[in-house]
Length: 374
Image: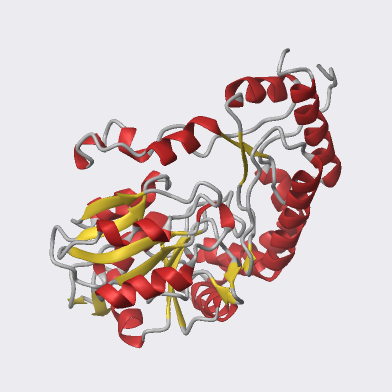
Protein backbone atom coordinates (compact mmCIF):
# COMPACT_ATOMS: atom_id res chain seq x y z
CA UNK A 1 0.00 0.00 0.00
CA UNK A 2 1.27 3.47 -0.88
CA UNK A 3 0.30 5.03 2.47
CA UNK A 4 -0.25 8.74 1.91
CA UNK A 5 -2.43 11.48 3.29
CA UNK A 6 -3.37 12.53 -0.23
CA UNK A 7 -7.11 12.70 -0.92
CA UNK A 8 -8.63 12.60 -4.39
CA UNK A 9 -12.41 12.91 -4.45
CA UNK A 10 -14.42 11.41 -7.27
CA UNK A 11 -16.08 14.77 -7.78
CA UNK A 12 -15.79 18.07 -5.89
CA UNK A 13 -18.58 20.34 -7.07
CA UNK A 14 -17.36 23.15 -4.84
CA UNK A 15 -13.88 23.04 -6.37
CA UNK A 16 -15.23 22.55 -9.88
CA UNK A 17 -17.39 25.67 -9.65
CA UNK A 18 -14.95 27.94 -7.82
CA UNK A 19 -13.63 29.35 -11.09
CA UNK A 20 -17.14 30.52 -11.98
CA UNK A 21 -18.08 31.84 -8.53
CA UNK A 22 -17.77 35.58 -9.18
CA UNK A 23 -19.79 35.34 -12.39
CA UNK A 24 -22.42 33.31 -10.57
CA UNK A 25 -22.74 36.02 -7.93
CA UNK A 26 -23.15 38.70 -10.58
CA UNK A 27 -25.83 36.62 -12.30
CA UNK A 28 -27.63 36.16 -8.98
CA UNK A 29 -27.55 39.89 -8.25
CA UNK A 30 -28.98 40.61 -11.69
CA UNK A 31 -31.61 37.92 -11.15
CA UNK A 32 -32.75 39.63 -7.94
CA UNK A 33 -32.70 43.06 -9.55
CA UNK A 34 -34.75 41.93 -12.55
CA UNK A 35 -37.47 40.30 -10.46
CA UNK A 36 -38.42 37.89 -13.26
CA UNK A 37 -38.17 34.34 -11.94
CA UNK A 38 -39.84 32.04 -14.48
CA UNK A 39 -39.02 31.74 -18.21
CA UNK A 40 -37.21 35.04 -18.39
CA UNK A 41 -34.36 36.33 -20.51
CA UNK A 42 -31.77 33.94 -19.01
CA UNK A 43 -33.75 30.91 -20.18
CA UNK A 44 -34.26 32.46 -23.62
CA UNK A 45 -30.57 33.32 -23.94
CA UNK A 46 -29.48 29.87 -22.85
CA UNK A 47 -31.91 28.13 -25.19
CA UNK A 48 -30.55 30.06 -28.16
CA UNK A 49 -26.91 29.63 -27.14
CA UNK A 50 -27.21 25.89 -26.46
CA UNK A 51 -29.09 25.26 -29.72
CA UNK A 52 -26.34 27.11 -31.58
CA UNK A 53 -23.65 25.17 -29.74
CA UNK A 54 -25.23 21.84 -30.68
CA UNK A 55 -26.01 22.83 -34.27
CA UNK A 56 -29.77 22.58 -33.78
CA UNK A 57 -32.44 25.10 -34.68
CA UNK A 58 -34.20 25.07 -31.31
CA UNK A 59 -33.72 24.29 -27.64
CA UNK A 60 -36.47 23.95 -25.03
CA UNK A 61 -35.34 24.21 -21.41
CA UNK A 62 -37.11 21.83 -19.01
CA UNK A 63 -36.94 20.86 -15.36
CA UNK A 64 -34.51 17.93 -15.58
CA UNK A 65 -33.11 15.25 -17.85
CA UNK A 66 -35.85 12.72 -17.15
CA UNK A 67 -38.50 15.24 -18.16
CA UNK A 68 -36.51 15.98 -21.32
CA UNK A 69 -36.75 12.31 -22.28
CA UNK A 70 -40.40 11.92 -21.32
CA UNK A 71 -41.50 15.06 -23.14
CA UNK A 72 -39.41 14.00 -26.09
CA UNK A 73 -41.33 10.73 -26.21
CA UNK A 74 -44.69 12.39 -25.62
CA UNK A 75 -44.30 14.84 -28.47
CA UNK A 76 -44.65 12.03 -31.03
CA UNK A 77 -48.04 10.78 -29.79
CA UNK A 78 -47.09 7.13 -30.17
CA UNK A 79 -49.98 4.74 -29.43
CA UNK A 80 -50.05 3.69 -25.78
CA UNK A 81 -48.00 0.56 -25.18
CA UNK A 82 -45.65 1.14 -28.11
CA UNK A 83 -42.29 -0.61 -27.95
CA UNK A 84 -39.21 1.57 -27.61
CA UNK A 85 -35.76 0.03 -28.13
CA UNK A 86 -33.22 1.06 -25.47
CA UNK A 87 -29.80 -0.27 -24.37
CA UNK A 88 -29.82 -2.85 -21.58
CA UNK A 89 -26.99 -1.21 -19.59
CA UNK A 90 -28.25 2.36 -19.48
CA UNK A 91 -28.99 4.44 -16.41
CA UNK A 92 -32.49 3.72 -15.18
CA UNK A 93 -33.82 7.15 -16.22
CA UNK A 94 -33.77 6.13 -19.89
CA UNK A 95 -36.03 3.18 -19.14
CA UNK A 96 -38.17 5.07 -16.64
CA UNK A 97 -38.94 7.72 -19.25
CA UNK A 98 -40.36 5.05 -21.56
CA UNK A 99 -42.52 3.57 -18.82
CA UNK A 100 -43.73 6.96 -17.61
CA UNK A 101 -44.68 7.86 -21.17
CA UNK A 102 -46.90 4.78 -21.27
CA UNK A 103 -44.72 2.58 -23.46
CA UNK A 104 -42.76 -0.67 -23.28
CA UNK A 105 -38.95 -0.71 -23.00
CA UNK A 106 -37.28 -3.33 -25.19
CA UNK A 107 -33.72 -3.93 -24.05
CA UNK A 108 -30.85 -4.46 -26.50
CA UNK A 109 -27.39 -5.46 -25.34
CA UNK A 110 -24.45 -3.04 -25.66
CA UNK A 111 -21.18 -3.40 -27.51
CA UNK A 112 -18.81 -4.72 -24.84
CA UNK A 113 -15.99 -2.44 -26.01
CA UNK A 114 -17.84 0.90 -26.20
CA UNK A 115 -20.79 0.30 -23.82
CA UNK A 116 -23.14 1.90 -26.35
CA UNK A 117 -26.02 -0.05 -27.90
CA UNK A 118 -24.88 -2.80 -30.28
CA UNK A 119 -26.49 -1.76 -33.55
CA UNK A 120 -26.09 -5.27 -34.97
CA UNK A 121 -28.61 -6.56 -32.39
CA UNK A 122 -31.33 -3.95 -32.90
CA UNK A 123 -33.18 -5.39 -35.90
CA UNK A 124 -33.95 -8.71 -34.21
CA UNK A 125 -35.83 -6.82 -31.47
CA UNK A 126 -38.03 -4.81 -33.84
CA UNK A 127 -41.69 -5.79 -34.15
CA UNK A 128 -44.80 -4.26 -35.70
CA UNK A 129 -45.28 -2.46 -32.39
CA UNK A 130 -41.85 -0.77 -32.36
CA UNK A 131 -42.01 3.00 -32.77
CA UNK A 132 -38.61 4.38 -31.78
CA UNK A 133 -35.00 3.75 -30.83
CA UNK A 134 -33.95 5.57 -27.68
CA UNK A 135 -30.19 5.83 -28.18
CA UNK A 136 -28.04 6.52 -25.12
CA UNK A 137 -24.61 8.06 -25.70
CA UNK A 138 -23.20 6.47 -22.57
CA UNK A 139 -20.19 7.79 -20.65
CA UNK A 140 -19.60 10.56 -23.22
CA UNK A 141 -19.20 8.75 -26.55
CA UNK A 142 -21.73 8.98 -29.39
CA UNK A 143 -23.18 5.65 -30.53
CA UNK A 144 -22.63 4.40 -34.09
CA UNK A 145 -25.30 6.60 -35.57
CA UNK A 146 -24.76 5.73 -39.26
CA UNK A 147 -26.06 2.21 -38.73
CA UNK A 148 -28.75 3.28 -36.28
CA UNK A 149 -30.07 5.85 -38.74
CA UNK A 150 -30.11 3.20 -41.47
CA UNK A 151 -32.19 0.88 -39.28
CA UNK A 152 -34.54 3.69 -38.26
CA UNK A 153 -35.11 4.63 -41.90
CA UNK A 154 -35.63 1.00 -42.90
CA UNK A 155 -38.35 0.43 -40.30
CA UNK A 156 -39.75 3.98 -40.22
CA UNK A 157 -38.74 4.52 -36.59
CA UNK A 158 -38.04 7.73 -34.73
CA UNK A 159 -34.65 8.28 -33.08
CA UNK A 160 -34.60 9.87 -29.63
CA UNK A 161 -31.15 10.57 -28.23
CA UNK A 162 -30.35 10.48 -24.52
CA UNK A 163 -27.43 12.92 -24.34
CA UNK A 164 -27.30 13.26 -20.56
CA UNK A 165 -23.63 12.21 -20.56
CA UNK A 166 -22.61 13.59 -23.95
CA UNK A 167 -22.47 17.40 -23.81
CA UNK A 168 -20.27 18.41 -26.73
CA UNK A 169 -19.60 14.84 -27.89
CA UNK A 170 -19.43 14.40 -31.66
CA UNK A 171 -19.53 11.67 -34.29
CA UNK A 172 -18.09 12.56 -37.69
CA UNK A 173 -18.18 16.21 -36.65
CA UNK A 174 -21.89 16.14 -35.77
CA UNK A 175 -22.95 16.91 -32.20
CA UNK A 176 -24.86 14.45 -30.04
CA UNK A 177 -28.60 15.08 -30.10
CA UNK A 178 -28.84 16.12 -33.75
CA UNK A 179 -29.02 12.73 -35.47
CA UNK A 180 -32.72 12.18 -34.75
CA UNK A 181 -35.56 14.64 -34.27
CA UNK A 182 -35.03 14.85 -30.51
CA UNK A 183 -31.95 15.18 -28.31
CA UNK A 184 -32.52 15.15 -24.54
CA UNK A 185 -30.00 16.66 -22.14
CA UNK A 186 -29.57 16.80 -18.38
CA UNK A 187 -27.76 19.60 -16.54
CA UNK A 188 -27.47 17.75 -13.24
CA UNK A 189 -24.56 19.32 -11.32
CA UNK A 190 -22.03 16.57 -12.10
CA UNK A 191 -22.55 16.69 -15.88
CA UNK A 192 -19.88 18.14 -18.15
CA UNK A 193 -22.25 21.11 -18.41
CA UNK A 194 -23.79 21.12 -14.96
CA UNK A 195 -26.08 23.59 -13.24
CA UNK A 196 -26.19 24.23 -9.49
CA UNK A 197 -29.36 22.18 -9.25
CA UNK A 198 -31.61 20.25 -11.58
CA UNK A 199 -32.19 21.26 -15.17
CA UNK A 200 -32.63 19.77 -18.62
CA UNK A 201 -33.30 20.59 -22.25
CA UNK A 202 -34.53 19.13 -25.51
CA UNK A 203 -32.95 20.15 -28.79
CA UNK A 204 -34.60 19.79 -32.18
CA UNK A 205 -34.53 21.28 -35.65
CA UNK A 206 -38.20 20.53 -36.29
CA UNK A 207 -40.32 23.67 -35.91
CA UNK A 208 -43.52 21.75 -35.15
CA UNK A 209 -41.85 19.67 -32.45
CA UNK A 210 -40.34 22.84 -30.98
CA UNK A 211 -43.71 24.55 -30.73
CA UNK A 212 -45.38 21.53 -29.17
CA UNK A 213 -42.58 20.96 -26.64
CA UNK A 214 -42.76 24.60 -25.53
CA UNK A 215 -46.43 24.00 -24.76
CA UNK A 216 -45.96 20.58 -23.18
CA UNK A 217 -43.42 21.90 -20.65
CA UNK A 218 -45.86 24.66 -19.62
CA UNK A 219 -49.11 22.84 -18.80
CA UNK A 220 -49.76 22.18 -22.51
CA UNK A 221 -50.39 25.86 -23.05
CA UNK A 222 -49.41 27.87 -26.12
CA UNK A 223 -51.42 30.84 -24.84
CA UNK A 224 -51.80 31.60 -21.15
CA UNK A 225 -54.77 29.80 -19.60
CA UNK A 226 -55.55 28.00 -22.89
CA UNK A 227 -54.41 24.38 -22.78
CA UNK A 228 -54.08 22.79 -26.19
CA UNK A 229 -52.32 19.67 -24.90
CA UNK A 230 -52.12 17.62 -21.72
CA UNK A 231 -48.76 18.87 -20.52
CA UNK A 232 -46.88 19.34 -17.28
CA UNK A 233 -45.00 21.95 -15.30
CA UNK A 234 -41.39 21.35 -16.32
CA UNK A 235 -39.60 24.61 -17.02
CA UNK A 236 -35.88 25.25 -16.81
CA UNK A 237 -35.41 27.45 -13.75
CA UNK A 238 -34.42 31.02 -14.58
CA UNK A 239 -31.59 31.05 -12.04
CA UNK A 240 -30.20 27.72 -13.23
CA UNK A 241 -30.30 29.04 -16.80
CA UNK A 242 -28.28 32.04 -15.63
CA UNK A 243 -25.63 29.76 -14.15
CA UNK A 244 -25.60 27.66 -17.33
CA UNK A 245 -25.07 30.82 -19.37
CA UNK A 246 -21.89 31.36 -17.35
CA UNK A 247 -20.62 27.80 -17.87
CA UNK A 248 -21.59 27.10 -21.49
CA UNK A 249 -18.71 29.15 -22.96
CA UNK A 250 -16.32 26.98 -20.89
CA UNK A 251 -17.77 23.64 -22.00
CA UNK A 252 -15.17 22.97 -24.69
CA UNK A 253 -12.38 23.66 -22.20
CA UNK A 254 -14.06 21.40 -19.65
CA UNK A 255 -14.23 18.62 -22.23
CA UNK A 256 -10.63 19.26 -23.29
CA UNK A 257 -9.50 18.95 -19.67
CA UNK A 258 -11.41 15.71 -19.17
CA UNK A 259 -9.90 14.30 -22.37
CA UNK A 260 -6.43 15.19 -21.09
CA UNK A 261 -7.07 13.24 -17.88
CA UNK A 262 -8.37 10.34 -19.95
CA UNK A 263 -5.16 10.42 -22.00
CA UNK A 264 -3.12 9.94 -18.82
CA UNK A 265 -5.24 6.94 -17.88
CA UNK A 266 -5.22 5.52 -21.41
CA UNK A 267 -1.46 5.67 -21.76
CA UNK A 268 -0.22 5.07 -18.21
CA UNK A 269 -2.53 2.46 -16.66
CA UNK A 270 -1.12 -0.97 -17.38
CA UNK A 271 -3.20 -3.44 -19.34
CA UNK A 272 -4.24 -5.26 -16.17
CA UNK A 273 -7.64 -3.61 -16.63
CA UNK A 274 -9.92 -3.07 -19.61
CA UNK A 275 -9.84 0.58 -20.61
CA UNK A 276 -12.37 2.54 -22.68
CA UNK A 277 -12.26 2.25 -26.47
CA UNK A 278 -12.63 5.53 -28.31
CA UNK A 279 -14.00 4.72 -31.74
CA UNK A 280 -12.71 6.42 -34.92
CA UNK A 281 -14.38 9.69 -35.88
CA UNK A 282 -15.70 10.09 -32.33
CA UNK A 283 -15.00 13.01 -30.02
CA UNK A 284 -15.39 11.30 -26.65
CA UNK A 285 -16.01 13.83 -23.84
CA UNK A 286 -15.48 11.37 -20.97
CA UNK A 287 -18.30 12.33 -18.66
CA UNK A 288 -17.30 9.03 -17.06
CA UNK A 289 -13.98 7.19 -17.38
CA UNK A 290 -14.65 3.57 -16.57
CA UNK A 291 -12.28 0.65 -16.36
CA UNK A 292 -13.30 -2.98 -15.98
CA UNK A 293 -11.78 -5.76 -13.93
CA UNK A 294 -13.05 -8.88 -12.12
CA UNK A 295 -11.16 -7.47 -9.09
CA UNK A 296 -13.35 -4.35 -9.15
CA UNK A 297 -14.47 -4.42 -5.52
CA UNK A 298 -10.99 -5.13 -4.16
CA UNK A 299 -9.49 -2.40 -6.35
CA UNK A 300 -12.14 0.07 -5.24
CA UNK A 301 -11.35 -0.67 -1.58
CA UNK A 302 -7.59 -0.41 -2.20
CA UNK A 303 -7.95 2.96 -3.89
CA UNK A 304 -10.15 4.24 -1.07
CA UNK A 305 -7.53 3.21 1.50
CA UNK A 306 -5.11 5.32 -0.52
CA UNK A 307 -7.39 8.33 -0.41
CA UNK A 308 -9.00 7.91 -3.85
CA UNK A 309 -12.79 7.90 -4.17
CA UNK A 310 -14.35 6.08 -7.10
CA UNK A 311 -17.88 5.30 -8.24
CA UNK A 312 -19.68 2.44 -9.98
CA UNK A 313 -21.81 3.33 -13.00
CA UNK A 314 -23.84 1.20 -12.43
CA UNK A 315 -23.82 -1.65 -9.87
CA UNK A 316 -27.08 -3.33 -10.96
CA UNK A 317 -28.31 -3.93 -14.49
CA UNK A 318 -31.78 -2.48 -15.22
CA UNK A 319 -33.38 -5.90 -15.77
CA UNK A 320 -32.35 -6.88 -12.23
CA UNK A 321 -33.65 -3.73 -10.54
CA UNK A 322 -36.42 -4.76 -8.15
CA UNK A 323 -38.93 -2.22 -9.39
CA UNK A 324 -38.40 -3.08 -13.06
CA UNK A 325 -38.15 -6.87 -13.23
CA UNK A 326 -41.83 -7.12 -14.15
CA UNK A 327 -41.10 -5.48 -17.51
CA UNK A 328 -38.47 -7.98 -18.60
CA UNK A 329 -40.01 -11.42 -17.89
CA UNK A 330 -36.82 -12.86 -16.40
CA UNK A 331 -34.90 -12.07 -19.61
CA UNK A 332 -31.15 -12.39 -19.33
CA UNK A 333 -28.68 -9.77 -20.53
CA UNK A 334 -25.25 -11.30 -19.89
CA UNK A 335 -23.19 -8.56 -21.54
CA UNK A 336 -24.90 -5.84 -19.54
CA UNK A 337 -24.60 -7.88 -16.36
CA UNK A 338 -20.88 -8.47 -16.95
CA UNK A 339 -20.34 -4.73 -17.38
CA UNK A 340 -22.27 -3.91 -14.22
CA UNK A 341 -20.29 -6.51 -12.24
CA UNK A 342 -16.85 -5.31 -13.33
CA UNK A 343 -17.02 -1.57 -14.06
CA UNK A 344 -15.32 1.10 -11.96
CA UNK A 345 -15.36 4.84 -12.64
CA UNK A 346 -12.18 6.83 -11.95
CA UNK A 347 -12.09 10.53 -11.03
CA UNK A 348 -12.22 12.64 -14.20
CA UNK A 349 -13.72 15.90 -13.04
CA UNK A 350 -12.87 19.40 -14.23
CA UNK A 351 -11.46 19.60 -10.69
CA UNK A 352 -9.23 16.52 -11.16
CA UNK A 353 -5.65 17.56 -11.81
CA UNK A 354 -3.07 15.71 -13.91
CA UNK A 355 -1.08 15.14 -10.71
CA UNK A 356 -4.20 13.48 -9.28
CA UNK A 357 -4.44 11.31 -12.39
CA UNK A 358 -0.80 10.18 -12.18
CA UNK A 359 -1.26 9.35 -8.51
CA UNK A 360 -4.34 7.29 -9.32
CA UNK A 361 -2.41 5.49 -12.06
CA UNK A 362 0.41 4.65 -9.66
CA UNK A 363 -2.02 3.18 -7.14
CA UNK A 364 -3.82 1.08 -9.77
CA UNK A 365 -0.58 -0.25 -11.22
CA UNK A 366 0.79 -1.05 -7.77
CA UNK A 367 -2.39 -2.93 -6.89
CA UNK A 368 -1.92 -5.26 -9.84
CA UNK A 369 1.89 -5.46 -9.48
CA UNK A 370 1.27 -6.91 -6.05
CA UNK A 371 -1.15 -9.46 -7.43
CA UNK A 372 -4.08 -7.45 -6.04
CA UNK A 373 -3.11 -8.27 -2.47
CA UNK A 374 -3.51 -5.61 0.18
